[in-house]
Image (tube, rainbow, N blue to C red; front, top):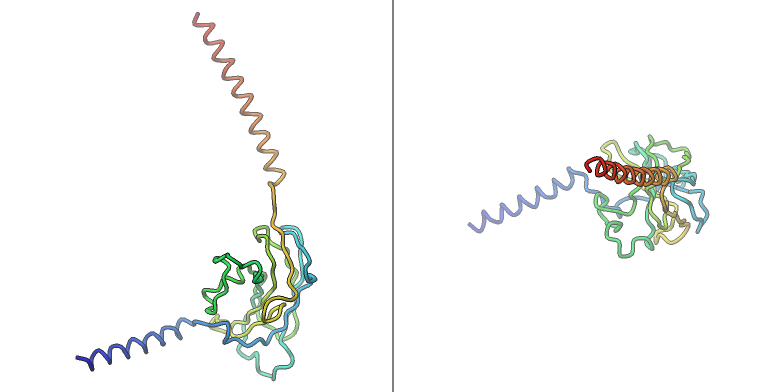
Length: 204
């Protein structure tokens, strides 16, 4: 009986390892930093969501030998939270397993991979919240699994950071609509009381 239990346990462990491999679980520490990434905002620069834009430039680090990027098929550029904007915010927490990582939640652009330098100008989306950020690029293979990365900051994510301020207040059209609705409500209320008053006089 003990022998059978041992065989079952070993089988489960093998299946677990196989499942992890099959479903492509990737850990950040397994990726090589083979990409160079730069962004136009200066350290400490403040950008406004929905209005401002910046340019990101990326490419293969030429210090790596030829063929390093042979498996690269796609590049995804993402906007990522700096550690200062992750404090006490579990929904932005950095995880070693990339499928669970919440550091980089905003997609900037996805493009086919090219070893030569490429650039993209991105308008900061309106839904980007207040925070301090950097940009990271991931290289994906044919199976759509991360195989390499590059970023605009250092390993500790403390340099070349920039800030984004969120949109505050309401859009002008919403304010106009609100005023119009309020005015209509007042007029309708006055009309209702006037009609009721006339109705009362008629009944008398």
